[in-house]
Length: 340
Ligand SMILES: *Cc1c(COP(=O)(O)O)cnc(C)c1O
Image 1 (cartoon, helix red, strand yellow):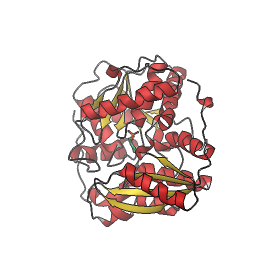
Image 2 (cartoon, rainbow, N blue to C red):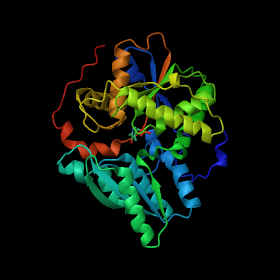
Image 3 (cartoon, helix red, strand yellow):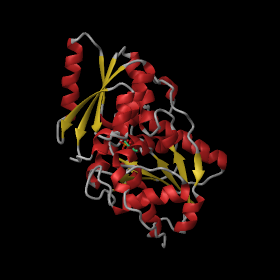
């Protein structure tokens, strides 16, 4: 994997730290838990889209784009990070936000990521749930072309083979860190949504022949669909990297038991995970992605799934800006019980 062959703008703060979570590990009583801090990638409160955007915006600049169009749910972390990259690079940003949860809470509609999108100067277009978001981006692109501009469309979550390069590169970074520290990793877990993170990671981990299994914790789609999406993107990413066929279908595993009622709707397990991480590790998760990923981690540790394993790594994909869009979720104080 030779990433220097690809266009890239270097804005992320890398490498992100790989740190133990010893208070949490002691409280849960399972294997030693580690965290890969991709919430600390540096651009506008960080998150996993930053690694993808280094390659996507590299391509956009190479194509002389002067406006970037992208889309996501109202509290999209991807849109916020894209708006930040555009501000930093002096490119216009147009964001199409889908009202996927139907929430009328003013914090959800205006605070958190939406506040930051506006601060970075993005123009925002709100559309109802179940809009064809790909078509909405094409329509916007036509309008910009008619104005003589050069638009570049970034798909939802930045999840295409170009964006996924960022996570193949993250696999290389993680394996290098583990080797330097003498850390034997039994498994890596993270929240999986639009598939680019998992597809990039699985491609990188396999291309390196690391022997480290990966588990995506789903936040939206059912298991079969999520795994199929990740596998298709991993195949395309492997091809782009010059190692076609390196990922097999069995390498792609998603657990979708922690989605709850649906995308963007936190349940009791999500909220508990956010509170546990905040109080035991002073780490901020989010109600849409990393909180569900961590709920999966905690539950699987409690069930003894990793018994016998020495070290488990949770990749923190970011999203804490979204907490402010979900303020009322945390109104009632709760007692935490960490009995396993
Ligand atoms: C987008 C996102 C994810 C999911 O990553 P995908 O590459 O879309 O699967 C996970 N966590 C956070 C905080 C995100 O913003």
